[in-house]
Length: 359
Image (tube, rainbow, N blue to C red; front, side, top):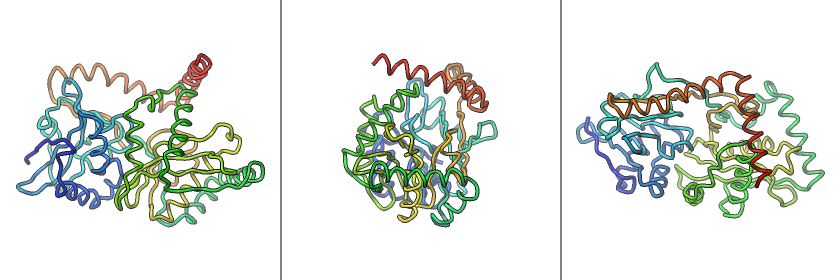
């Protein structure tokens, strides 16, 4: 196995085409965060992005995109934002993860959404569910599942959609739109949500705003940014920005106007999005790891993603362990315990209200 390192911009058409071919040959890699376009676009904004190209003789057998941080700490591309991480590689190829990390000049590679089919994965790594909306049998089959398993939620959402139309005005849904104005409306809602819930505002970082804008402007058969919005009487009510491959839509940034909260606009939007996505050939909407009430109500399946690290022996790996691993385990404990999770969530929301009141 031979490994060469390159900046994403240095990959030519043969390498990018090979990457796409490997990705499409394995269902476990069918996620836009693993697509070459995503790495290339992030690489245009983040100088630490690199791609390890894996060769078996003259043949390319894999691609490993990563970010190289100080002390040789490796992270996924756009770390902290992505819901699918890992290598894209040929079936049957043998890859020694520790040797790969060394060949990349890394002391550690840490991850929190590592997909299946990964040589980086072992039994020590923590597994977490990633809820999905499975549309392979069509939207009608999906809504049939909801009527049977989440009947109250489904009926209530339809009733609230009708109520929204009666009380506010005609409800319409625009799917796969490209306008800058609805995108920035959505990002403003998301910023407000982060502040209200005590979370860090991702869009306070200009590079993330520019990343979303560049992704929205990207549109090919195998990869695109997808923006959609629900309107009532011509006013935007709820929306979402995500990414797609040919058959998978990755849920990423959903948000809504809190003035319409009593109508459950997020649920109205997700049902509308699922219907239009199915019509466009999407077979799976990956809502991403995380225990959110709306995901539990809407899911009809789930994937598994892993959290952990691959490390080589050395002082940098030891420092990284002390800085990251105990905190990660504490966080996992809180998330796994409903009482602790609710307490932490209430605390964050209280901090968010205080922060909003001061601004």
